[in-house]
Image (tube, rainbow, N blue to C red):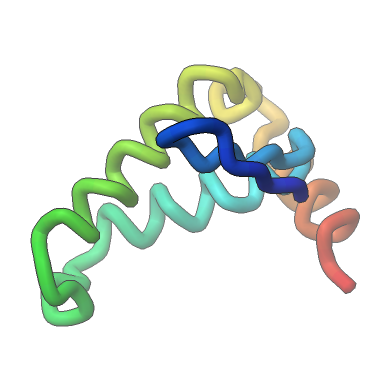
Length: 79
């Protein structure tokens, strides 16, 4: 994972495996009732937008073997 600042943007680069793991977590988190964790709706909005942005580039979520892909990604990302 890398990050850099570019004018008014912060760019975070993820490996594909990191993105798959993060997308899976965001999806589960965004579907659950965690309203009490947010101080402002903007925080929730950022997580929804992040999930949507990653979904646009990760097509594996629709693969028949997604569980296996996710498992391998988690294994490779883990310390």
